[in-house]
Amino acid sequence: MSAPISNVRPDPDTVLVDIVDYVLDYKLESDLALETARNCLIDTLGCGLEALSYPACTKLMGPIVPGTIVPNGARVPGTSFQLDPVQAAFNIGAMIRWLDFNDTWLAAEWGHPSDNLGGILATADWLSRTAIANGKKPLAMKDVLIAMIKAHEIQGCIALENSFNKVGLDHVLLVKLASTAVVGQLLGLSRDELINAVSQALVDGHALRTYRHAPNTGSRKSWAAGDATSRAVRLALIAKTGEMGYPSVLTAKTWGFYDVLFKGQPFRFQRPYGAYVMENVLFKISFPAEFHAQTAAEAAMSLHQQLGASGRRIEDIAKITIRTHEAAIRIIDKKGPLNNPADRDHCIQYMIAVPLIFGRLTAADYEDAVARDPRIDALRDKMECVEDPQFTKDYHDPDKRSIANGLTIAFTDGSTFDEVVVEYPLGHKRRRAEGIPLLVEKFRTNLARRFPARQQQAILDVSLDQAKLEAMPVNEYVDLYVM
Image (cartoon, rainbow, N blue to C red; front, top):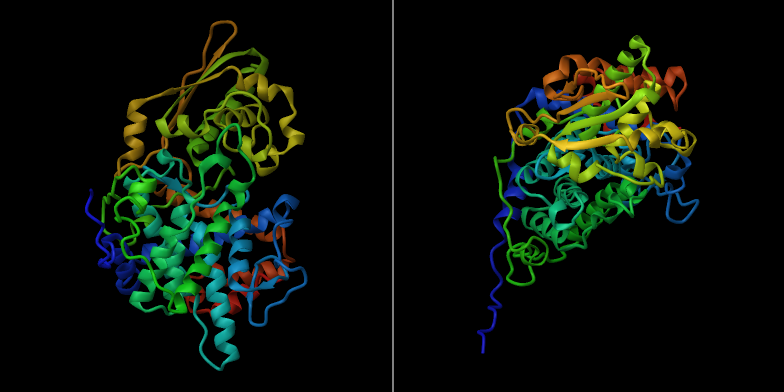
């Protein structure tokens, strides 16, 4: 007969303690991180504004009970909604992620750390409006930027060495975890309460990757992060009531996260928490496309120009070889029919075919009106992905973090174009000087989709001035975006 398991309640798992002590005690001294967070903020909100043009997104937004307005509730940028912070977090998170155009982090696990802004902004706005109603001081936008930096760091540092996708779990698990930690800090949770909250995020139900992969790829991947960040707000609020936590949620024998969901393996860490992830985050500037294909789309745009200059036609192409890295093959190498926009923006062949044919790749290019062009599927059928082990190695190298793709076109007459290789996409840290002006232009374009000129300028005046933005009360900044 086996010995009974001890019922002595253990000390909290080290992973929980490290997250909480970082959130509560880390003193940010990186001006680069704050500047990058400001650029991340405007880019993320801009992505959300563009998504509001798509009924598939807006049908999910608003209060759970139609017509509900929450006094001192959080406002949803680009809309007239004023909601409780949990539902506001879902709204903001869903619109941010809808078009797959916000920032990215690639490592053993991938994801989009700015997804955490849904919970951060909704909570900070609600707390600020409530504080003002009670004659107290609101939070400043610098508090939001710092929370973003810390959420990026938690999500990104865990992702460096731990692959959730290899055990079938979706990366939004890390959004829920990071959002819970930083939202709990904004709510004023004590250290013990915050440990309880983070444990609740790990013991919670976790999303499968089913909705990201054939044959089930679908639009849940566009609102899954909104669901995760809103769940984080809910869990932090539960912890604030004094609800207990689960100290060995990761390490408990048989019933803990590691044994149940991670094949018995503990999390591994490459570096301590700091400001590394925000400083090195990848921006999507050129294309609303899954990030492993960003450099492939850049290469395809170059080849589109070569085709035009040479007088060659798309119909003259016999084969396209895609030299790529392992993660791209695992995630977005896709044959067969593509059933919806979510299917198409996770297919590397589609994201190469469209720029080769049209010389562009926009969110609208994933819709049925473009996808029904028979040249796209005909060109997809001529493509083959081949892993380059050096590309895979450089992808994981912390000093490089490249996302390389190389395209070679062979023609029916036996001739070829020289391979076009792009190692670092426009949004990479190595291309910041080139990329940030274009990121600002992307933000201007997205503001113009939603607001009259005077409102656009009021937003720009604050958003492009670091000191002015950091000092502005959160509620006043969010009010700039109200319809």
